[in-house]
Length: 307
Image 1: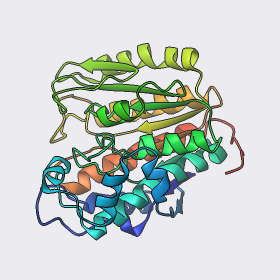
Image 2: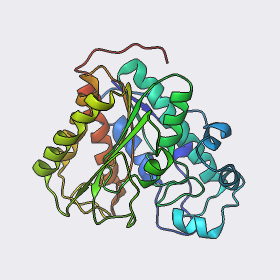
Image 3: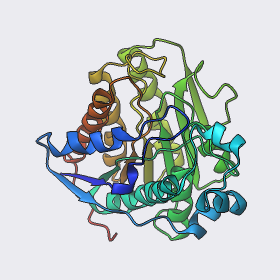
Image 4: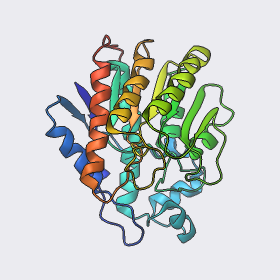
């Protein structure tokens, strides 16, 4: 069973400016619902303002809530922040938190959006408005749902915002493995960054992941994992510089889930990046990713912890 968090507000009208398309979020759910794998859908509540302000600048949160984000910040984000966008990002942030709560029961759960790892303290960037990974991790620790959270970011782009927002915290560890020559040009410092050369294929990529991820579990000893599962390392991705195949992406995702669940640790994924001219193909990659993780999770006992 795949437990997936989704909300109608994850889709938003096409922006007046910018190139970002929101229709892939509907197409992901369409692919999941017709894919033959059992799916249970869960609707998130919007992230409370106080939870966002615990990580982001209150003035910036106010700008988003009132659709008064300055044009300069909107340019960094990549689209105008309208009332629809404000509602969307509150729900996507709530979705990552809810996926983590569901993972504590079921071992694994997915948010069908989010993974907004470029958003910084006082601005969004790179199609990200609020940083759901940092916000959810902060709240989960504050509420006692986890003592030590590992954020695994395998999007092709570095999770610079997540690294910046959690820097110096001993209870949150950020691991980011990305294409070295891709956005952002100026990288932040994660707890562990692995920069990869262009056109890295499956075998070399998986070898790097297998070399670096298990020691983090042993040394940091997390009790919850948040996974940014972007599919933009795919060789056909419009904004990627790596060369993973469909099979390579699924092996990557299965490995991350196995590394968590074999140690009895719950794991929640956020959708992350994936770009192409045909949104349906990209959506299918995301859907296959979530199904592969659910199938791997099924190999391990249900956790049955209270949500």
